[in-house]
Length: 178
Image 1 (tube, rainbow, N blue to C red):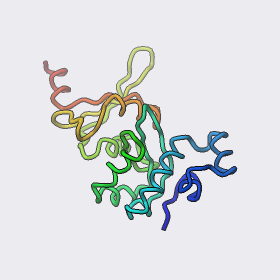
Image 2 (cartoon, rainbow, N blue to C red):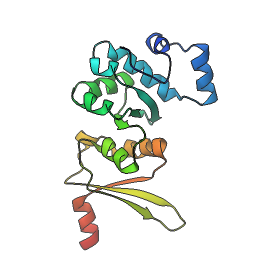
Image 3 (cartoon, helix red, strand yellow):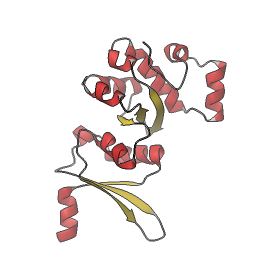
Image 4 (cartoon, rainbow, N blue to C red):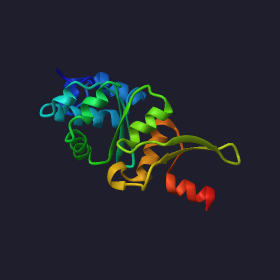
């Protein structure tokens, strides 16, 4: 069973867009990130059966990293195989974050930061009407587990339009009581 992708499965396998998909790309209905992610998923689906069952709704590319929005039920099956995410990152040559499509902002952030837990999500209003979304995670920031925070911020801005701040509980506590 082939994955459901923003572009035709034939285009994803061959790497060449048909007139229909090329037109959708030019009109902005799909993005270059959708095309790249579709090609990677299609190639990997041949040896990773979990990817053959996914539905990729949308992909966002930022600074060589990708946020892939999948059907909500697809995340668990992908997370059950520890090889899927590293193989996606190798195929796309960048960091990949997997999130459930159509989720709330909090669920979106929890999916992004998985396996780290999200303690709290707050909106911080700055002078001039700007706002930031502040996420507090337990313990120390683990670049190994979450990834590059600068790339994460850019990816979140691209995917959801949020300006993201990530702090640990300790950092937040020091600022409050320090």
